[in-house]
Length: 288
Image 1 (tube, rainbow, N blue to C red):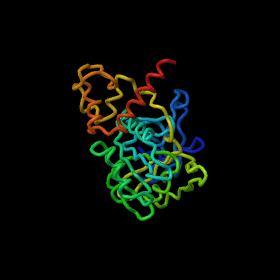
Image 2: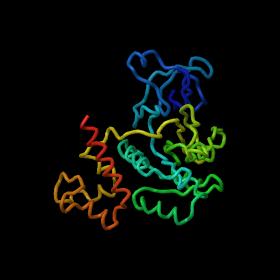
Image 3: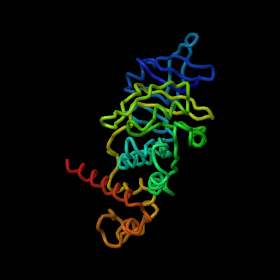
Image 4: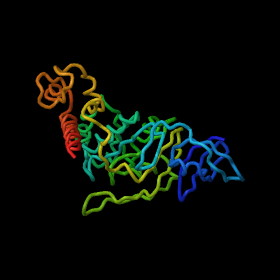
């Protein structure tokens, strides 16, 4: 039979099949071949006794991540807040780059909108308008939850974002029986207290599924290179071939279409500065 690994704890994997959840262990060949089973894997398994089984084979993966160990992600819900904590746009853009690199559709989720003015929210929307879908959400009054459920219908979505932006609370809204422990923001540091302790995927009312993970809070874009960085910024990729030089890095080169678009406002200044910062990070990495 075929099933989906929804959780793995202590060497046991909980596999969702048409007949229900089966607790299974992987065959020894996985360890021998250095293969680690992960939440999100579609697997073939044999039920040895009622509710117990063994995993025989992993079906081909769409994508995979090491930290956290999840696979077959269709959508990233990149969660951030307008305040408490303030948006870290550099980190948000790294999540977006990671999405582009792995062929994953990103959805920007501006949570805790009840804490910000409409003017502040509009300024944030301007940064990504026309590039990525951005939902305004409040777990206090339910704003945007139905729209988010619609966007992830039929997909496997992963929550990503810094601590303290309400990912666990958002999960509770999407899947009330998940009963995730939610953390308060430290009044002293205004940073979130880490609450999620293992990886799991939950079914969402409306037909989608959502990963909850303890990771995706910080990382470096180690796989990106100078030559392909602009391809992960859709508004810059749209200008490909319009610069004077084919190998333009969009810094100080003459007749640069990207820099001109940033100067005239067609590319938001924050996005252009994000690109330059990531380019510098990649160039510095090559020195060591």
